[in-house]
Length: 109
Length: 425
Image 1: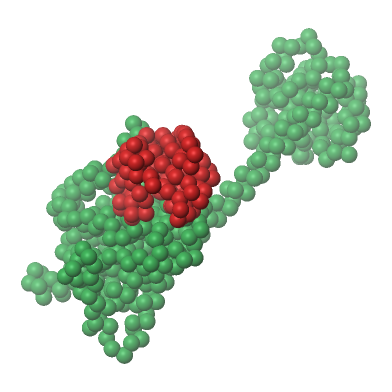
Image 2: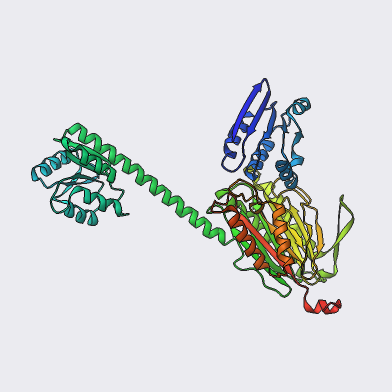
């Protein structure tokens, strides 16, 4: 798994590629959690993630719970496997989802 | 004075004495041996931290000593420094190939001697420390695994009209999966399968918590209903939600038992939300008298409802995973099991088992295999589990399962008395 972050002012785009499993999830968590600030705007780009286990969902849950009211988080580029897992487990309802990065950027307030 | 004990092996007394003297002055405890044979005898009855070994000796030479040491699991980790004259460089190479740690040229240079001994002893100390820690971790995990096994039912309930079988294969020493089955009043059986997010010790602790809460809350609910002055079986609850506007009528005890899932979710989200853990789980109450299976699927892989010929349905999620959202009302659904129907509940370690090409076993293949199994007139829950277990084993072909593999099958046959009453017997 590789994580690439690009920050411009309050906006950070986090691009993940590879599998998110119990081995790689802690690395992702270490990158993501420090990005949570009162007015953060985070876009998590997952189109290059093929497979995500529940360890990845756990990282998303941590991120969601630490996100303050004033912060924004949008997930983009979910493949069918990730979308299915998030639908079954009820995670889809917790997040704002957009199909692509441009759509995600447009959805930011 | 150091605590290290060194063994000096040399047939030349002059060499032995001078080397021993230097080493004792540097603070080491020193024992000596005149040849290889004597050295091995001493190594077998006393602990040494390092051996300084001459090559050319009568009775048994240095090569033989090295061969013996390296072949002995108890002695192979003791570092050996070969002591030799500079012109014997060929023999030194041979000793290094046989497993010697380092070599020292004769005549001895004190600085070099000290440096090589210190380096070898430090390497051994670090190795020993690592082994010690590994052993501690192994022992702790072993204890964890033993205690965790205690959180699974020692044996599955056996009742008329019901055959249960389970398979539990943790990917690591401790697992996040579990299954459970227990009998409650009113000829009811509770069936549970669950998968805690992530892996390792954290998942195992969360598994123990979830399993215990579900079990105790379900048992308490059933026990308290027994204390009422009226017959709880004669009372019903109408469950309604937006996808089931006409509602579902449940016997009061069944409803109360299913409520264990909501109470468990509330407890976990209130008291354990800081760890951000959750469990997907399927929790069902099977009324053996009627074949009615009422269930909550909290974000879990849909169990398969199989008839004797084909798949009848999949019991899809009725709410989010347990531990994710506070105060959730989990929708309840019900299916009617006919005599000969079965239920296969599993965790994603089954469908996400990967072969060497990296492809998943998949839900489609799982359905196909189970349909085939029943169409071949097989009628045993145990045989189905066995077949799937073997199939998965050959599917991952020698590779390690990356996730826990857990399955629970239930085969229902209507009690004979009921069959007669319904005119089928």
